[in-house]
Image 1 (spheres, helix red, strand yellow):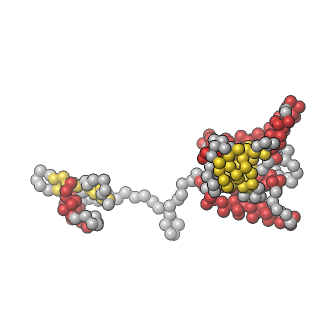
Image 2 (tube, rainbow, N blue to C red; image 1 turned 30 degrees about the vertical axis):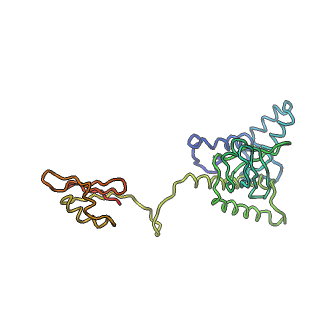
Image 3 (cartoon, one colour; image 1 turned 60 degrees about the vertical axis):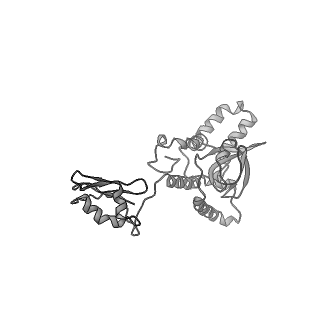
Length: 269
């Protein structure tokens, strides 16, 4: 509920791909007593990682300590893919603060495309930068406008301080940033709603017609087959024993069917 910032979120078992974001959030950020707005102080991590550090901090190596610090303190932000080196990595730019980072990402870089946006956290280690966590699906470039709008909103929050946004600011506003990701994610997973110019939804209808005969249907509908002579339509006709027209069913380029009297005809060109 806290991750999705709503009272009735979609269950995780219906969005299993989100585990790559939810698990790090649960381990490193979530705390049942924290307010929605973070303080400007250095992040301390959620209740799970705090409890772990109290019990195991003395047994961790320097690298393990660094990884936990990055998981707690590095912001989760929106990164635009600038250049890709398939099989090796990519150059990413943080859309919110402008920071560029070259990451090492072997398998993931095979599917990256310049211009796409990734909601992710980057760990900058002594000899390599890599993803600490990332959303499973890249955000297409046409959704970038929503992120730029977020950037403007965050800049307004620090306007009185006469400075640019920093990584520390993004950590403070992590909930606002995640809320924009969730809005984009849900919009990408929602089918578009078709409607007319008045805003009314389109409704599907099936029409049934009772006809006197297949011949009368042909006479009435043949002019709709533009560029096709009536005689051509009869090339694949099926005739009744008394010589009357039973039905017509042309090939793959045009599907035109006249059924017997009392049946439903199906016409398509």
